[in-house]
Image (cartoon, rainbow, N blue to C red; front, side, top):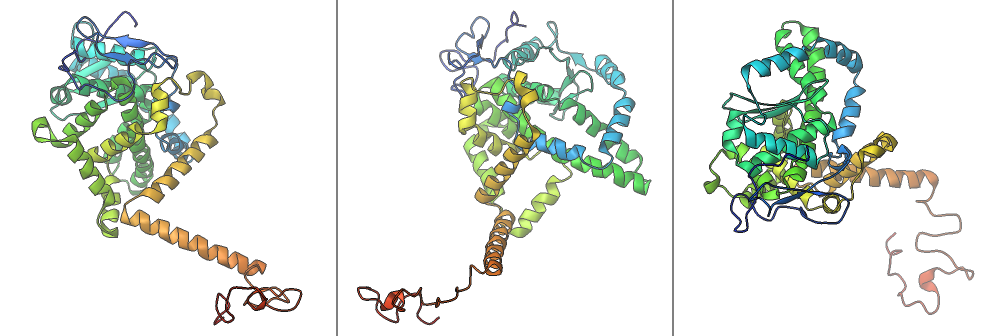
Amino acid sequence: MSEQQPAGGGVDETGEGGAAGGSGPAGAADGGGGAVGGPEGDAARVRRRYPGISSRAYEHPADRPALVSLRKLTGFETVFKVLSGMIPERSLRLLFLSDSVRVDENQFVHLHHMLVDACEILDLERVPPFYVTQDPQPNAMCIGLDQPIIVVTTGLVQLLDEEEMRAVIGHEVGHALSGHAVYRTILLFLTSMAVRVAWIPLGNIAIMAIVSALREWFRKSELSADRAGLLVGQDLDASLRGLMKLAGGNNLHQMNVDAFLKQAEEYERGGDVRDSVLKILTVMPRTHPFAAVRAAELNRWAQTRDYQRLCHGHYPRRGDDQESRITDSVKESAAHYAGAARNSKDPLMRLVTDVASGAGEFGGKLRDFARGTGRPRPGEQRGGSAGKDGRRDGDRPGSDRPEGEGPAAGS
């Protein structure tokens, strides 16, 4: 793979050909990773590689725990094993092979170079088969059970520039590295099956329960893959532009990334509790988070210390994955959600936090009362503790608190 270089998409010395000043020290020499340089004319754009990087380095805190929760769903393992045998993966490959254009050294060459480049950066040993399929709807996916397949639509190819497309390809390679393709394929199959068995009440309910759980995980996995796309493209502006184009189309001259992020902040802040409930209802049937929300999430992650450390080569390796414990991921997820709840501007989330805080305070007072710590001890008065001379603190000589004032007054 190291002999193949990406074609185009770099930044020359004048800053043309892509967004300059990508996020992260792309050409830094420290940290323990080489750099991937471009072909002739692309020497100014050097991208950092991440040898042996584990998907834990970029996975959203809710991604892996969501999969664990999904597997705990009653009957999921049984359904998963059955569906793994039912899904005709070979027919999927034949379908794309016969009715799409395979990306390689002879077709969509620039996309092929981007894929090889992305696999080198994330150190993915096996380059997934890559297809472009005719569909005006911008979309991309990574599916497959034994070997992932990456598919992008013509609508997406026409919508994005090279740096934006590089982030998308990195996004899909991130899915492959994380092992998301298996569950995404199951979701696609189940969604199709739910339509076919809608006339069977119990069958439809059972399938939709698993579909809903898969969709919740699917949305979190998209946030993880967005981070992988940033690690590959190493250009935050390009990643944000791509998400903005998914929302507003190819009208870049009429859009502004900063304004788009402010729009996302306004959405997250919401109006009142009614808006918060409507957000939940509108996102539940979706497989992807809203584009503005994804942009805001990615922008926040790019400002974190964890991302900066990752860019300098400090990240978990795949060789240590066996030693990692799922309990650590769950704790990390819990800490993430607790912090998000504290800092959230959403009215419903603030209400829940306030209620939880009030309940905790009430519970603490109730506990103190039950233990007797909230009541005066024998020999003590509410106005203060009695000294050896039998007088309260406020009555002792030298006390600068006038008698009758202070906490004891009126009690």
